[in-house]
Structures are given as structure tokens and as C-alpha cells.
Image (cartoon, rainbow, N blue to C red; front, top):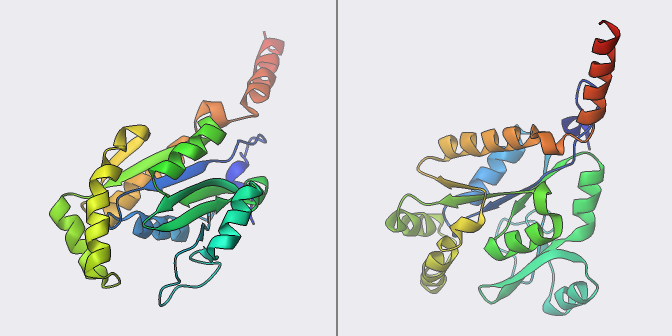
Amino acid sequence: MAASNQNDPHGFRRRGLLFVLSSPSGAGKSTISRMLLAEDPGLRMSVSATTRPIRPGEVDGRDYHFVDLAKFREMTANNEFLEWAHVFDNRYGTPRAPVEEMLKAGCDVLFDIDWQGAQQLYQIAGGDVVRVFILPPSIAELERRLRARGTDSEEVIAGRMSRAANEISHWDGYDYVLVNDDAQACFEQVHSILRAERLKRSRQTGLIGFIRGLQKRAEGLE
């Protein structure tokens, strides 16, 4: 993996970002995630493990790591997850080792997780976590998008709609909150956030040394 996104042309590095996207199901976080990954070569996706059945068109290891409940419990007991949650009668978790490897290789890591996962991740990594919550323009539009996907039964859609209010209630646990009226416009906003967060002074680990060098050279000219 290329490490260029954490290398500055002036010779100092920065700490990697854990970039979290959350939203009620159907509000667009997965679409925005795919657009970010296609556009930004310095970003890699954290692939979650899940106990839910694989859906048509999904690929094990690309969309999720599909495991049975016994395996998931074993991974939990062995502290192999950065975070995990029980959602819609299934379990989802972020394997720790791949994330650490991506950060070590110089990549920022993208997480498509819910508010529970975002909260756990923040408790572990604090200031290196950037949390973005995506809202639908209306509840009616959220339901329309869920039905348009054509992948869920009426029972599943009803469950997702029922859960949406609870998910939205956690909006204030995020650093940024956006309304997804248009996928392209929302993507551009999210990408702007990512680029700005990469430039934060607190993440430029070599900045102090660089500035001291400038000061010494400037003092020598006096």
C-alpha cells in the first residue's frame, strides 16, 4: 500500500486517520464510502466481520468477513475487535489487525459503522478518530431509498425504519453532521472534511521539528 498520503513534501509525517461514516440504513453512507475509496488512493476500507448471511452479489472478504456466531464469539473473547455491536439480530465487528496494518503502511482507514461502533472506536483512539454522520433529507425519502434497493423484505424494511429514529438521536456524538440530498454533493462535502482533517496541526507529528529548523536558519540570518 502506498504511504504517500502520510508523507509531507517537506519531510515530516502525520498520524493516520480513522475516518468514520455513520447513518441510518438507506441514508447513503455505503454509497459515499464507495465514492471516497474510488477517488482517494490514500484511503483504505476497514472490512467488518458479521454473522449475518451473505447476500447475492456480495463477496466474502470484500464486503464483509462472513463468520458464524461461534467464530464471532471466539474473536470477541480473544480481543480481536476494535469495536463490535449487536444490530438487527446479527453481530458486526471491526477486526483489529488489518486496521493496524493499514495505518502502519501509511494509509487512512475508512469505517462504515453505526453509532455504537463509532463510540467504541473513539474511546480507543480518541483524537485520531473523525466522525461524520449522514442524515436523510426526510423520513419519507429514507423509506423510498430502502424500498428502491430491492434487497430487503417488508419486515426488514419496517425494522430499519423503526431503528432510524434511535440512530438519528445519536447525531450529537459526531464531529460533522451532513444531510444527503444529493450523493455527489454529499460526497464532495465528506471528501473536503477528510482533506481538512489531514492538515490539522495536531496530526503533523514532524511539524515542530520543521519549524525549529526554520527558526534556527532565520536566526542565523540576523
